[in-house]
Image (cartoon, rainbow, N blue to C red; front, side, top):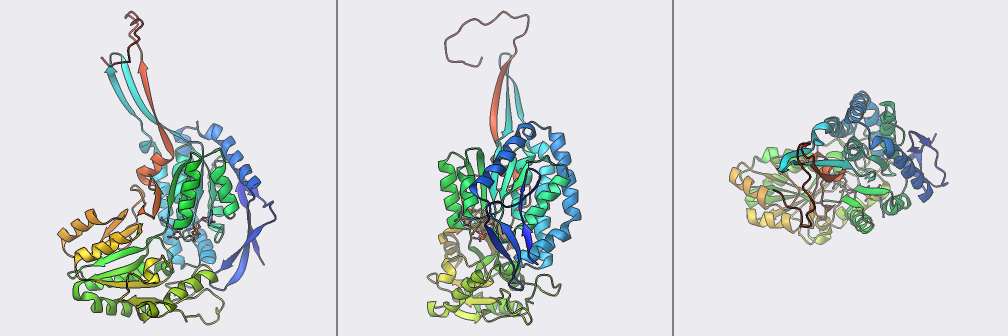
Length: 500
Ligand code: NAD
């Protein structure tokens, strides 16, 4: 039986009124299990209106009230980890343990939002001039919107809305239409935690819903995470309408392995970071650069580990890697591998023929490993977003660094070495927003901010951490003079105010 996912507006389910629905597929079986309502521009307007109405009181609510709700939400989320992870696995396909990890990383941002009191503390300078004090405060923006990708249906929305609402904004979320159930369930939990109606709204849909959010005059800021072409469109369109925008895009993350590295540790890390979540992570390692003469040995160790990965349905505890999100995406990923040999790559492992018995219609693809990849190969130049790892060779550290820095993307990068001096140089010289030293997926903890450089982020703010608070608030400086009652008024002075 097909399940139906509707919008969540004003603290309750809002049935789709546009007559348009999208299919949600279980990637492990290929079967359509769910229909998701697609919002029309008018339905988006209804959600924005609910958020605007809620902002009148939420924007003025006390920090104590907001954090009490967030603490209750945290407890509910903690209690429902398994349920949310199961929803993720059913629609995204990733294995249950990975889905649990995603919920845990989202919870980390809720933890941060529970402590928003500290981050929102203002500044006060007294007696900056005679009897004059200056206070700097930060205030919410109003209604803000979040548009999120399929690959982290719970975590990426939680990069955004906990901070936004803790700062006093109200929120309209447009999650990916490919796996809409987890974010909708999370919105229900927030209402259960006591969040007033309209503070968090969820509208489902496609470009129609997104474009209405981008042009709506009552939406003051837009957070986006997804592919680079869409991120660029979101940034250009929303900024042209005077909105604050942070738009995080795609990636091609390089891992540099220096000749002195622990090759077993490097191979473990490369395999985990390349094939975890079937490569559908924006921080996945998709290019390993072997520096010096270690290439053949490193590839042999990667191969040995990669061949043992157990691929199967995400709900099966024996599976280490699940299927890809859609059949079309599976076919696209396979096309990079199919074309690799003709482009000069050495195909060490070809996973394109992989299938799982009894689940033949699932979106399966096995592990692919490409060696001696030339920089001209499509598999290197484009973000594949699947379980395909490219290995390149570089003669020196400088040659390896040049590859990292020539990439149009700059999300994350990592170096594996025992040489502290080389690692230090890399930290400073790598053109990427997040750098790992012997850490392949350097996703910052909640109280630091996440974001890339170059085509991996458009806008000035990274997400969560201090940048998150700054993005969702605007500064105000209040200059106050309270003359001493015993003093005579200063009198008229047409000169520009000076401090004395
Ligand atoms: P996507 O860009 O196709 O979709 C993201 C969101 O935008 C979805 O909600 C979708 O409905 C909407 N959308 C899609 N096309 C649109 C259009 N033309 N106009 C307006 N809205 C549109 O991305 P995806 O396939 O869901 O996610 C995978 C991509 O996200 C990868 O490129 C990955 O690297 C990237 N990603 C980046 C980060 C990061 O932090 N930089 C994190 C996760 C995912």
